[in-house]
Each structure stands twice: as structure tokens, then as C-alpha cells.
Image (cartoon, rainbow, N blue to C red; front, side, top):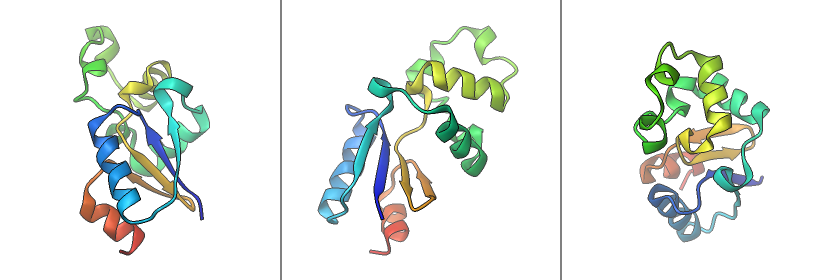
Length: 116
């Protein structure tokens, strides 16, 4: 099964996830959604499975710099539109293996997810 990890190359959390995957000999494909964008279908799938409130990174600078009008009255449709326009607002990393998803990085979650 192919492990795919989505995020932004220079993010500190991504670097921790990459290090964990390498240390545990987990081969992966990386998709940098800041450089390459994100597929709307994939983003909608993540939001449906994980909840758009968790996928949208409200703590990041990109979200914080938005106009108040853009932050107001958020719902799934508006959040997806914002994340498509500025993928830096997507929480990272998103890990996808055989249809299973994991959002964020914590070593213990990765260990449970991969059974190591």
C-alpha cells in the first residue's frame, strides 16, 4: 500500500513527520500542496471524513491574516473555498494510506496508525 503525505515542505511539523516515517522505514509519496495545489475532490473527502473544522488550520498565520469578512460565517463550503485558494490553511500533515486518513503529527498516533 502506498503511503501519501500531504503538506508543505518547509513546515516544522512536516519535518517531524518525515523523520518519523524515515526512522520507521515507511516509504511515502509527498505532495506539497503549497507548491502544487490540492485537488478539490481530495479536500472534500478529507473534510467529510475528518470534519472541515479540523482540516482548516485556524491557528496558522494564513488564516489569521484573512479579512474578518472571510473568517465570518464559516461553513464547510466556505472553508473548502478558502483552503483551495490558499492551501497553507490546511492543517498538516495529512496522511493517506489505503483510504485511511490521519491528520496532524504525533509520534504515538503514527505508531498506532502503522502498528509499530
